[in-house]
Amino acid sequence: MTGVDKRWLTAAAVTAVLGSLLAATPASAAEAVDWQPCADAPGVDCGTVTVPIDWAHPDRGTTTVALARRKATDPQARIGSVLMDPGGPGGSGTGEVKAGWSLSPEITKRFDTVGFDPRGVAGSTQIKCGLDELIADYPQVPRNQAEFEQLAAYNRNLGESCTRLTGPLAEFGDTKSVARDMDVIRGALGERKLTYYGVSYGTLMGQQYAELFPDKVRALVLDSNMDHSQLTAWDFIKSETQSVQAEFGEFAAWCDRTPSCALHGRDVSELTRDLQDKAARGELKDPRSGDPVTPLTLATIIQSNFYGPSWDRLASVFKSFADGAGAATRLRADIPVNYVLPSVFCDDWRLPVHNFAELEVYRRAAAALAPDVKVNSLGWTAVTGCIGWPNRTGNPQHPPQIHGAPPLLMLSSRHDPATPYAWSRTAARQSGSTLLTYDGWGHGAYFKKSDCVVKATDDYLITGRLPAKGTHCAAVEPGTAQARIAGPKPPSTIGF
Image (cartoon, rainbow, N blue to C red; front, side):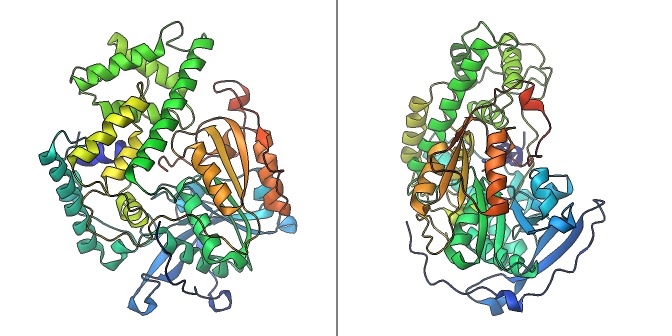
């Protein structure tokens, strides 16, 4: 497996003062989008907006942001546009909308669905990095100080190649800049105020938009929230790891009560810990290819199957590992390769790890918190991907400071493998938002076939009415017929 495979598959695809707030382009000055039919998606229109690379110095060059739009299905009932982002960092909103990503029919009837590619991503002006630097080998989990320095050198070389090949844009992938871009999009769409749905990393875009432009908010739905107030690398790794271990407990309990589980009647925890021990000794092999499976790769396989969740698939994969038989299914969900993650994440988060000894303390502490999973691979790779990164952190973490915006709606599953429920609770408390809790499993609460979640969210988007504070929606059992009924189409992005 190449260095790039390891890096991005293990990512599961993986307080500072704001400073002076600069005014974005006013809506009255924004040019309308020149929509044209998308060549690769019938029924979808494509367009772009132009924004400054550096919002602090808008005279230093511009970059383009790509858009894709499906028009409201009932023009007579149309309210406006809903801007949407699938997370990542690096998820392509245009690609998702072209593929059919949408909210419920009640929303698509009344709103144009508009996906955008944040700066640096996909159809927007891209952040590009050197192929040689991307595919270089590096230690995912350093075993000593020398390997720690190899990891730092890999990240440093990669970051320098991005700046060399991309230019200044590589250093301005931060989410605060994206939030400013979103206001240009709002004006170009002809909207007086923004209606937005963001999931996962897209929630940070929404939080920071509300900070910068509170008077331009109509309705923001933030699903599976980032908590941008975590100050240290250990805070981040700890909260991520606790969440994925708790999700493992839910998986094991499901397997125990579900006869169709491939591991039903077996001790799932004991089996998993045995696989982890074999992986640590270098003895665990992929039954199909014979390639070694590392502990971090095993953790990634677990986590990626918790998004849906796809517990039945994970049980089958683990049975194939334990029995040494060829797997009848893929080991992982399809994970897109996304090379902008460190350019964005390391610009948004200052989580220094100073040496191998410190990182090893975190690794051992995570393994003690999560005896089955050992670590949250997405959280681990996000943190370690910034060790040695050469560019500054332009948008370091801070509690959201939202004043004057209408109340926001936040959603979260109780058992989320990527953005822990605790993150949404913290973000809601700090921002004064209403949190709607889905008492079930997986990432992206709106797409879990819960009529309760969808109706409350749709009511808010259409009328502005929030559900009562403290509202909970019942879980839908994974693998049941109810969980397979038609509903809103979720995004395919896997990451934050």
